[in-house]
Length: 285
Length: 285
Image 1 (cartoon, rainbow over the protein chains, first blue to last red):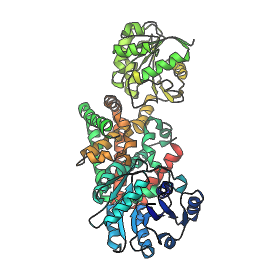
Image 2 (image 1 turned 120 degrees about the vertical axis):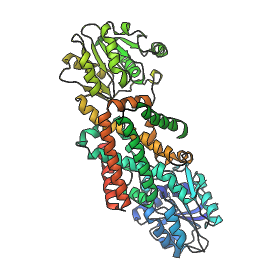
Image 3 (image 1 turned 30 degrees about the vertical axis):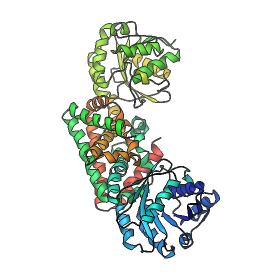
Image 4 (image 1 turned 180 degrees about the vertical axis):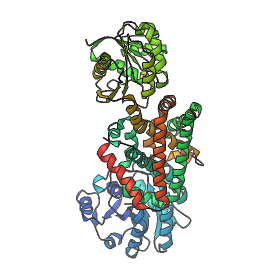
């Protein structure tokens, strides 16, 4: 057994799938799940996604070696704050938020010396949410990004790495600011673009016949537009400056295409399209 | 046998897949394929995608009951023009271009009375191109849009409908201008957005680490950015005004998101995201 008690706070898609993977690994004595929704806890206990569970944060935190805050980005700092009084000395806390800098800074501001914290972000998910959509193997072969700072205790880094290795993740490390800049561009921006694309079509004269012909290309882009609006409002708000920068970059690129098209400059259009096609072929696996 | 000789001009993904479907239907006496690339013709003949083939347009057109121009949008009108001297009286010509208004208008300007023309657009494809990527069943259950005008002979409509029914398509009809407005929004705009998205990332400081993390959302959006840049430059140029309008609508929607984020207006963000998520769920099948 690598771990004694590991507590997952928030039994959603990510928390549930992590709990399940840890249980299956056989390397955690007790996988404990806690959620404000009793139905999610019952489901997780009955299906064996967790060993034990409750809606009681105090019981959940007590005796835990590692506590994973798997709530929405906007709620992570409060979740961690509420756990602190109940956590054993030496317990390590981590999270799974899609935005890191603001959350990590806030938590580092109040976490007591007797506990350790390190931020993390598993790059995995589906367009579904909730523990009932948990997937065994969701993190297998997927990247997990650990975002330590100068303040991070070495033990926190090592244990959280070991935990995600049990879930099958490939572990990467970067500082919280780099993380947010990168994901602002490769994840938050494409989601914003998908929402904008649907909004643009809804804003056009008579959208109904349009959606009948979504097979022409729209459908591929809008799968993500069905994922949770609350979650994405949270993420974009938490990564506001990077997302704003990325949106401005996208607007500039759209305006390059617009101006090439306006001038009938086929060479310029081809330059932009070729660069994108080559990038897609060579660098996006 | 519903048809005697049907000629496909341009053995690419669409032309090749249509030829193959017609051959398999058993309702066409001779499926004849012509292409400027002898390798494509040889491949189509050897694999049985066509009954006969050559690089000779005159031979291809002669005796054909229906001729399908399956070349790039930018080349369709010239293709049709080159076929006219060799086509039998009463032969019907159609095309498969992704943009209709300009092409249909141009062809209707020079097509002689002894022939009939009607535009068409099968809503099917893959990100691959060329006859070697032809797919049997590519059009099965997919939409085919016939774009007649006041000048279209009834016989042309009927025969072209019958032809695409043999390929398994569901036939829709709309005028060329409506077609171009709709596909400017649901197809050409998403493709432009994908190119712009990759361009935005390439324009950001140090793009390399970014593409390593494309799994965060980018990958879903950029599958289409690997399809032929020449084809897309052609399509957007041929549908310039609609694409420009759609680009402006997308820019306006992005700017709505940008401004909501700047002001920290979570309600407005949620309004946009919820509308998109509901649309995706209810109306994009």
